[in-house]
Length: 258
Image 1 (cartoon, helix red, strand yellow):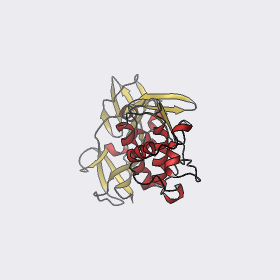
Image 2 (image 1 turned 90 degrees about the horizontal axis):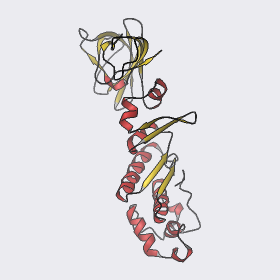
Image 3 (image 1 turned 180 degrees about the vertical axis):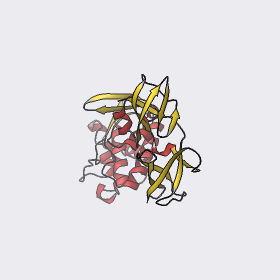
Image 4 (image 1 turned 60 degrees about the horizontal axis):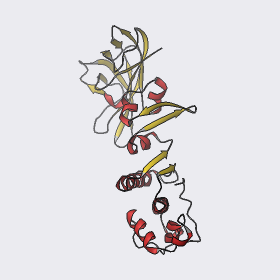
C-alpha cells in the first residue's frame, strides 16, 4: 500500500479494488463490494477516485491490497499525504480493519507517534541498523541508549552521577530503571513525568516562560544549578514567568554513561 494510494484514475473504485486479482476475477462485483464494505465504503464501487476524499482514497487502496489476500501487507508511509487531523483518524481506522481481518502488516513510517500507537512490535532503524526492537512501551520506557531515547519521544536531560545504584542529579536522588556502572551519567526523564509541586517540596526551580499548545503547556524552567528544562504540563495548570516551583519526578528515570 503506497504513500498516496496510487489509484488508477481511469478505473472505477470497484475496478481499482479488483485490479490485483487474476484477470478472470477482476469483473466480479461481489468481491469489490465485499472489500469496500470491510473498509466502510459501501455503495461507492461505481465512483471515480477523484470523487473521493484523501482518507477515502487511502481506504480504497487498502481494500485493493486486502482483496489479493496477502500473507503480509507492506504499508509504505501510507498516511504521510494526509493532513494532521485526517491522518490520525484514517490510521486508527485502518489499524482496526487490519486487526479485524487478521492481516499481518509491516508499516514503514518516520512518525514516532504513529509507530508507537499502531504497532504491536517496533523496530527502530538508525543509520541503517536496528537500534532496538520490541513492544512500543519498551522502546519508550526503556530505550537501550540515549540516541533511541531521543528518537522515540521528548527528553528532559541532566548531568548526574551513579553511586551504588543510586542516581543523584538536580532533580534529586532516584533509582534508575537500569543502573550503569558508577560514574558520571546523562539522566533522561520524559517531560510529562516531571510534575510541578509546592515550592517547599521537590527540586527548586524558577519558571522562565510558558507556551500554550492546546492540550498542554510547554513550561520552561531553570533549576538552582542553572540547568534549563522544558516540561509538558496539562493546559489546565497555570504558570507565569518568575514563579517559583518545586519539581518532582513520577515514573521511570533513565541513566546512560557519559
